[in-house]
Length: 76
Image (cartoon, rainbow, N blue to C red; front, side, top):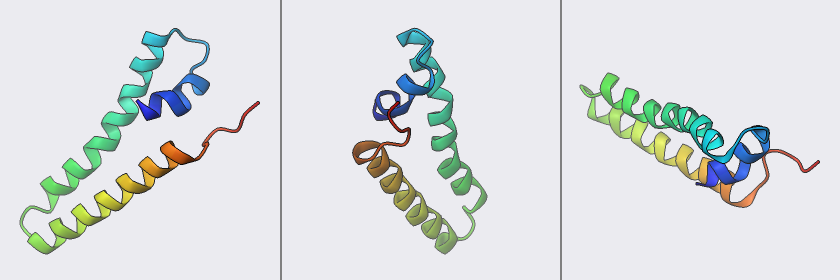
């Protein structure tokens, strides 16, 4: 919801709201796929998997804080 609210409405302003929502989804799928791929490729080493998990949590918190508190696209 924050991704759609913060930048999809501005980036995809020429489209209707259902289309904006649909265009936001692939970006969030890619964001969710990265930790999944890291888990698949590092499952044999628990320390590496744990490190990837910590990196994923830090990236999530940074991404969330940017969406919740800052503007990524300046006002016109």
